[in-house]
Image (cartoon, rainbow, N blue to C red):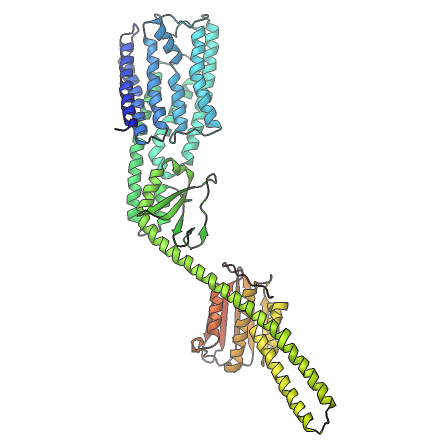
Length: 586
């Protein structure tokens, strides 16, 4: 038997004995007390003690159990007012309403046992002060309670003043009205902050607590305005409501367990037909719920699309419950902090969905790996473009300049040679070959990476392509802001390859190039009026371009029918989701 269990058994015995002592005091008192009221009083005290001790045992880290037990214990202190001796009667007079402070504290702290700063903390402090200070002040100026003609002597009496007693009573009613109104507001806010599952399980306590506050206001306001004293029947109704609280709490615990079981059953019934996220959101009553899947190899969390996510830290208005399967982390549930009041419910529902979460994690891992692969492909494309630019620059600044210098020197030599000599003829042949080689070198450099694209952008590069084409080419480019280098390069080479194929195979009289930005995507279309029938799987250069476009998160398609011309269409993100960095040229 654990120490807590022994202590709780001891408290239960003490609470039961205290109730018997109170019963003895009431039944042996010189004053007559209705049996119904005695039964209600015992039910209230023992009900709070029993429910509190049970809740304390079930959830030892929650302060609601100790607070409920405290309500039951201090409730029985009021029975001392039925004592026939002066000392216990005086003590009972001072502590007769102490249970009200404990009750307010318990309701404000429900269901977590914690009291938040602000209105809640002030309400608890004022409740305790009112429950102790006001009865003490009354004892100083009132010889005996109203209707008590044969009560023992009040040992705290300083002066028996009806005016002073009335002033204390008015102050007490005003404070009571303020406390009860604030209590109703706090309980309503608490109810509004809960999800559907919490409302089903815990609302009975809040509704009865709010009913106590509202009924107390109904009693206090008329009395403050001069109505007659509260009748025993009205007082009994209020006591019945208070006595019902511990049983409502026990019902809430039971409903919470049933809701937890229902959530588990719902998981097994629904996870096959909907996503785990939707099933969990419905079971927990939190439409804001999101899931993050753990990738053990990568050591990070990702969302359902495979994108990396960071779990929200404490204090951000979101809570995190991690779910494991066979000792290994599977996912994390990011949910409303209101569900922290019942963490076992979240874990149980998450565990019920663990298999579905594991399957969805595999899908998320595949998407993440695809994104990683796409990022790698994009980096390779970027590195290839950077290498092309370096080679083009090296050819332009190196070999091409040397050939130009050689051409100048050969021309100078040709001018000094005898026009009819064999040397002059050889120099003429060399100049022809050099000019042809220089032209081929320029075409090679342009094919590796056009300088105009780097220096003047995509629109100028497309104009240059149209100018070199052996047929009319209409260019329509609506780009707006400059595109990333990788996207510009991909668009340029798509147009280059398409126009090359038109010149070689289409027999077209004209072609049209359209480049436009469609929201966050770039569309490139090259169409001709040729013979059609193009087959991209036959080994054309479009296959490699399709890979380049796909590496940027886009796609390339070819539409070509006999005698209907050919349309090459590429579509890619204007700003690829996978960041592409291009290394600077040295």
